Image (tube, rainbow over the protein chains, first blue to last red):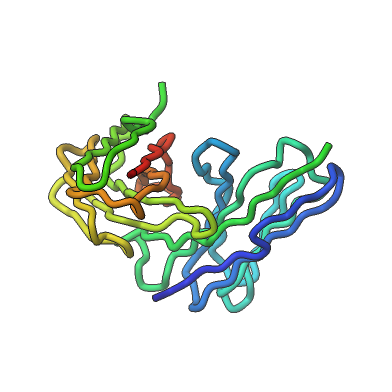
Length: 115
Length: 113
């Protein structure tokens, strides 16, 4: 079946360092979403990317969707302790569209930030 | 008040027991989902429902069943629990008229001994 892998599985950084997580799908995606899960919490929606090559920014977070719509990345500039958590990408397979809204979640990247 | 609630929040049960996890939402969304989360595996879809009369299997439905009692309620049952069903279970909702983002409940931590 379709798989969405994320690397790295775990990243430990010093506060102020940058962080990037990469998401790779075995097949083309119609769009991709990113979620953040704080320790002990539940996933919370961050953003959705739809267009090939799309780049969106939210303050220190930069999200990219690959040209082939098979990969995506999340980059955090100058991490803070509030960035701690697991970041998940979630892709929607083509053809599912609005009729299904099924998402294939990536395996997640756990970010630890040392003050 | 939380828009998506789950009960119980924690549950320990024994192998072979039947258990039901409940999810309620006040968001007015038609679409509801059940996921399980395991370390290193991310979130995997168990079942989903687009309205009261619509139930669909996800990628890991074996050993589980669901019931959509009303637009606001979606229950997940384990008919005969086994230890490898020990996991964190999340309910989620979405609104097809919006951006398709999913809203998650707080989760139920289930341990099967």
